[in-house]
Image (cartoon, rainbow, N blue to C red; front, side, top):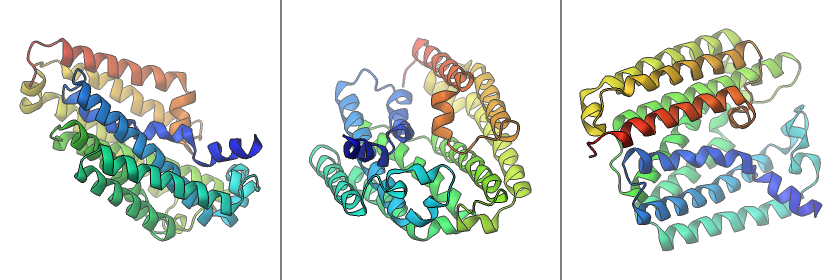
Length: 296
């Protein structure tokens, strides 16, 4: 039972929420009522969950020594010894094999190509790129963009440049917040990653504020864009900007005041304020675009 628990923990199932970005094209492309698109998107989501689990195992295998020096990562199955490296490698192989089988048998070829790009990016990230300041957070953001493109391919939705821009900026903002948390740990004697040599609190904090500003402005421009208003059949999307501004402010508060921005996923899962904001944004947006008479 303990071994099974360790196997589940090592793939970090709470992180699978990140793969929710795969569903965005389905929603914004008005394919929610298309059963085939929904099923394809579900399989794509499952594939990325398997692949992401494998990536997390690879990352933990690579960083066993460093994780043992970390105040919280030392509790991970591999770092704590709850799971042996050989068992982890076996689980990694199974996850990647299942992801590949589903991808090649049930999903389009272009999806398999994107999955391959995602895996290659993460292998490069685990062994080299995560040690390079700025490049490391850009790689994280690109991983989210790949998810959106994958969702578009399986749902047969043309991806708007707006959704790519917003996804990249938001992911970059969250990655910078995580680096700030790493810097705080480093200042307390916990050297968590080599890329921190290229960061300091002032740089990361200013970069976060810059990204927050760009995200808000970009989102407002998206809402008032004639192209987007025509596509969604409403001129009232600007109303959803309220939730975006409040959400960004809340995350800045969590980062700078509460100083607990180490895990964006756990923040979303455990912070009622953030959950309420995201829910209200989704509800407002869906009511506006699906309640309008014009659908493209």
